[in-house]
Image (cartoon, rainbow, N blue to C red; front, side, top):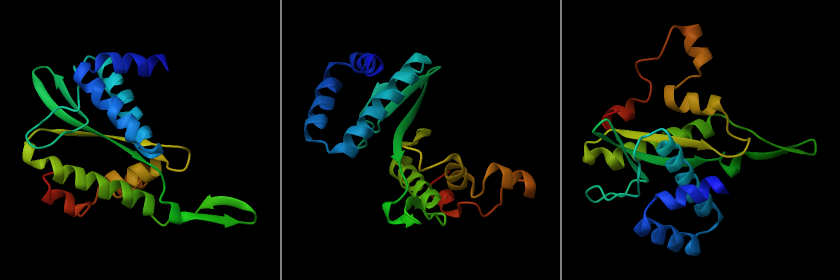
Length: 171
């Protein structure tokens, strides 16, 4: 809790009021997202990236703007879990039946965020927060690269057609 308290104290007075308003209106998933935004803010601050919390950039409000060596970067925090439709019961135990849905959910969200911030002409960093134990690094690797790192090593690298739609958004 001390870590979040520290983050809250560093975001500035006007941002603090906005956070408190959001917390009063938020459901559990929005509270979770906001707490992760504060967590990423504080981690970036501790690394010396001079973060600004929810800055106005044109007509957009990304989660953060990071200022590193006189260069600005936008940053957005994306909290993800597996889609609930994948939840299944098997012999009395709950689990997930995943046919790539988790990776697709991550990849689709990354593409949407890239499109959203493209007009700012600023580099965009996306922090993907894997909540719980139901989404793993394999899902993240598949979303980012179209394959796991192990698969890329075995096949000799990335495919040229990996995330063709990302190229439309300037990635």
